[in-house]
Amino acid sequence: MSEINYKKIGLKAGLEIHQQLDTQEKLFCSCSTAMQEKEPIAVIMRKQHPVASELGEIDIAAQHEYLRDRTFYYQVFKNETCLVELDEEPPHEMNREALNLALQIALLLNCQIPDEIEVMRKTVIDGSNPSSFQRTMVVGLNGFFNYKGKKIEIKSVSLEEDAAAIVSEEKGKVTYRLNRLGVPLVEISTGILSNFTPEEIEDIAYQIGMICRSTGKVKKGIGAIRQDLNVSIKGGERSEIKGVQELGLLSKVIENEVKRQLSLIEIKAELRKKGVKKINFKPIEVNKFLQDSNCRILRAVVETGGKVFALKLPCFAGYLKREIFPGKTLGRELAEFVQIFGVEGIIHSDEDLSKYKVEADFKKIREFLKAKDEDAIILVGEPKTNGKVSEELLKKINRILEVGVEKETRSVDEQGITRFTRPLPGAARLYPETDIKPVLIEREFLEKIKKELPEPWTKKYERFKKKFGLSDELAKPLLESKYFELFEKIMEKYKVSPAIVANTFVNILKDLQRREKVDVDRITENHFSQLFDALAKKEIVKEAIPEILKYLANYPGETVQNVVKELNLRPISTAELKKIAEEVIAQPGLTYEKAVGIVMSQVRGRIEAQTVMEVVKKLMKK
Ligand SMILES: [Zn+2]
Image 1 (cartoon, rainbow, N blue to C red):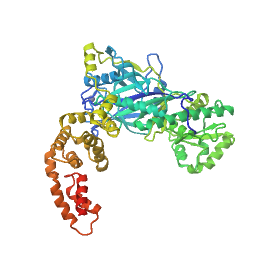
Image 2: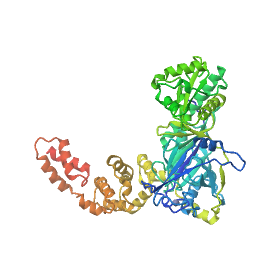
Image 3: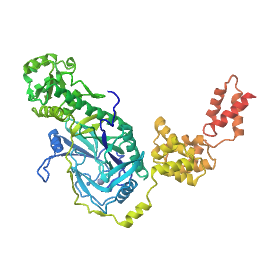
Image 4: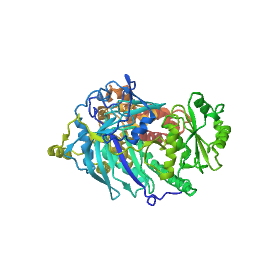
């Protein structure tokens, strides 16, 4: 596909950013938000049934979920789950620290704060909440921030409970971890972003994430920030893509979704031109042709009392193998659609049929259906559902023929490839939470929060560069890290080079984590204070920092002073260095590089590398 002109195709996107707040306790109970427990202490099973709304309608997405007939298993964790998460006990009082943080974020995004904050229940149908609803409250409305001279509209900022995290899903059994449920989460929804490229939309998401980080109290790491986005183009429909965990994937996900919508619109137009507007053939059961099929999958369905259904799609030959976006064909997309209902997939005539050993079966079925060469055939094996899934598939194909793209919810994998998850739920899904009284936001309280509002990250960024002389390469990752506040504390207290401190927080910790698998989160604020105090007093040289931090991560009970003694990291003088270097050089036949290497190994972490090189060079010249 050639370069896409996003303006011309009318790309519109909306972002919904979910950021976990780093409070000690959950939003409506005292459970820890650490999410550190590995082994569940109990597992609880639940099943859901769709309930008609007050208007007597059942939501299309809820109905779809019901058809999937899934059972939910919830893992319970010590200290991280209680009866509130299980909906066996009413919510406790709201966590005020979380509310304050959410209000700070809303104010940083120039939102209007409502006088009264009312907790609502939002219907949840995917089982990620045992109560079937999520508590949410709007804390800010009608905000904005500036991006490249344009105003980015912030529709709302809400504070809500995070959902349970999915562990696994197979054969209608879905397992969730309950420890994430109830962790305070801020949801930021932008207005419609039009006239932006996918890269710019990704950058806007980054800016919003950094505004949240300005508070210094947000969780980090995988899953701590998740982006949902909706995407549409001219002639397409809004699709909602859930849970992009890596910011760097966002632009690719948008590009792929645009390509998918363009492809479906194109396929619809081409087939219409061929006179195919709707498929009227009903799925037909074809078990009788498969009694002694060579295909293991189909025979298994027939032998266990299930049924295999065939769909004839006129003029569809070739379309099922067409790539609708990189990494996905139309056939694959349809296979994933039926998999949602617990069926293994489909076999279609655009595939390599020998792979499934179904060439002979397809021939017989084609004859039976009087299919022409230009027609495609799809087989769906339904172990239990008796044609219901094939009916759904036919409806899906007919919707492609009718509208091309339809409203739907899609999930995304680590490569940025999306797949269908369910139809888009209807809008009216909020109702008041009667267990919690609305919170009045008094003027004084709001003024106090405004006064104590953290410095926005863009300002801090400029200040860090100006005041501390930090390069972009250090200032940016430092602000992205959780150490930017500690950095300032250390700069206030100790006379040390800002670049050395920033480099420790940005690069040394990252190296220790990546290369040596050191758990750097075990290093405390106190450790860092001792470290830079020692550096300021010249009790250590900067070369000793990695070794000391590594040791402290392994033995967090230790002090920096003890580690210096234990690892023999007391700095040596140039005179001492000279003595060591002279002895080394006395060995015959050494090159400069080799000599430096040997000396270095004896004085590592005790004197600057630069000095070692200079001294050895000088001595060897003699
Ligand atoms: Zn709890």
